[in-house]
Amino acid sequence: MNQRDLNALTKTTTWLPLSKGAYNQPYLSSTPLTIDGVHGLWVLKIPQAITIDDNLTNSSARAARKLRLINPEYPVFNIEGYRLTLTKDQSPDDDSIQPKVINVYHSSSNILMAAFIDELGIIQRTRLNDKLDLNITTHIIEAINANIKLSLETENLIVQSLGFLRECLILPYFGDITADYDDIAVEVISIYKRTRIIILDAEIRGNFLVHDQHSRCIDVDLAYRCDSPTSKLNKDDWVAAMFDNFDLDNKPTSYVLTLMYLDDNLPANSIEDKFLFPELIEKLQPFQEHDISIEVSTLNILLQIIELNRLHPIKDEYITPNLIKALEYYYARKVVISHNLINNIVHFGSYLTKVITEDNKTPSPQFDSYISQLSSESRYSFHKSAADNIEEPQPKRTRMEMEMETAPRPSKYY
Image (tube, rainbow, N blue to C red):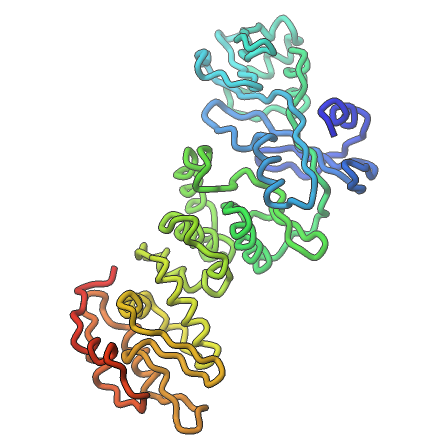
């Protein structure tokens, strides 16, 4: 649907206000509409005016791009228009005036101004006192000075007085059932797997709704992607806001932090889909919490430990960064990790062996003892003594395995 048809549709439709968001005012169509072949209720979201110190991450154009990536099966439309920024006692310089943004400020105690780039690309500065009622301009100046948000009606009056349309977003209505945290956490990983986008404020109530038995993200103001200039510019502020306002033990937020750590430490093309599932992300959390370096080999070791768990469970408290780093040492030196799913044998060289009894069912207690010691070793003092002290019935050792007994040990693992 083109811009002209979208504009006509918004004007002829009755829109009912929904609960106000932090940065947007959403409205619900009073009757079902058919847009691009999708029939149902639709939502109209209008960004609220922001201060000059805020960024433009809640712009409708950006939201439309992100939502199309996240929910590709549903159409999303951005109606091109202008948005507002409010500036207290400061005239914006020409370089700071952006296209499709009306900068409202007052040059003196009672003169209200608007600076913008017109349709010919020329910067204009206009006295709003000449276009709006005195009571309205006085109210706007008082609101700006007191750092109080304007009503949407007042914002619309400013835009209309200059002869412009208001920027807004149109998207399908997904209902009003908020997804639970477990489902949101799973969807956070799914979105990252498909798009490499991380929804930083996933835990905020209403940002994920249940629709067609799936969790759907509807708010992308804090959608982070490491290769995005906007994300790079705002990352520090966004992360600081997370630590200040969110529950870091909440499952969606803990997943978000771990995905960001993964994203920061490894090249995007090395993070394969096989690594992106809840169990592995949860086992990566201690690395993120303690700022421990990770490599692709870290993910491979964790993946194989998860597979080993299905054959011979390892206590969660044993799966520590120390254990993983010790195993990475063997892994990096090409000690063979053999895998026989039929006969339930998994070897990490001669130093980590799943020791089984003759009936091939009951694991040896020596295995648990060895894993326990590996997982609790100091990161600066891991020695091979734990492995040397195990007397285990194992297959005939290869030459490589015997050579590993005398291989030098690194002084630390991270």
